[in-house]
Amino acid sequence: MRKSEKSPREGIYAFPPFPVVLVTVRDSIITVGAVHLFSFNPPMYQIGIIPKSYSYELLEEAKEFIINIPTKGQIEILEFCGTTSGRDVDKFQKLGLTPQRGKIVEAMLIKECPVNIECKVLRKIDLGGSHIWFIGKIVAVHMDKNYDKSATVAYGLERKYREVGKVIYTRPKKQG
Ligand SMILES: Cc1cc2nc3c(=O)[nH]c(=O)nc-3n(C[C@H](O)[C@H](O)[C@H](O)COP(=O)(O)O)c2cc1C
Image: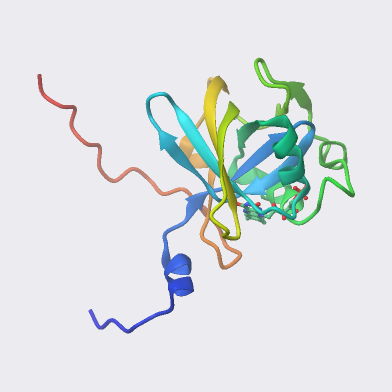
């Protein structure tokens, strides 16, 4: 290997792709690549939201959101929800998506996505960076019985959506 020095920002771009999801807050949708596990027990997820977005404004009040996991057939939805604002357009209506009330939270879930994860915000973390983080406790999950993880989408920055890779090794279960 012959390595050269790179900038901190290039470190971000070098990172392998993350899953990309559609987050709903109340009845609006935003595409989010900054999404990650925060805790296994209790189950918590975190999302990073840019403060100028309409979703940020809604989240500040609602303190609830739903992570909707899209499939690779839904790239156009990811693109549209990631380039238009709910301030200007009703994204559900424009895309012909079906809003359905969450079981616990007041946000609408996207019926056409195979998994919907309802979260209540426990904490907001603002370190002055581009994204403000919302840590959400998972309070309900809806999953299609034919859900196939390999049909989901990852986003590797540089404007590239990618397929999720195939399984190359399954770790053995702990003994005893
Ligand atoms: C692939 C992709 C990933 C994105 N990831 C994020 C993200 O993690 N956080 C965020 O706040 N915005 C992200 N965006 C940008 C928002 O989706 C975009 O600003 C959107 O128009 C905001 O909508 P709103 O004003 O209705 O909230 C992403 C956009 C794309 C296309």
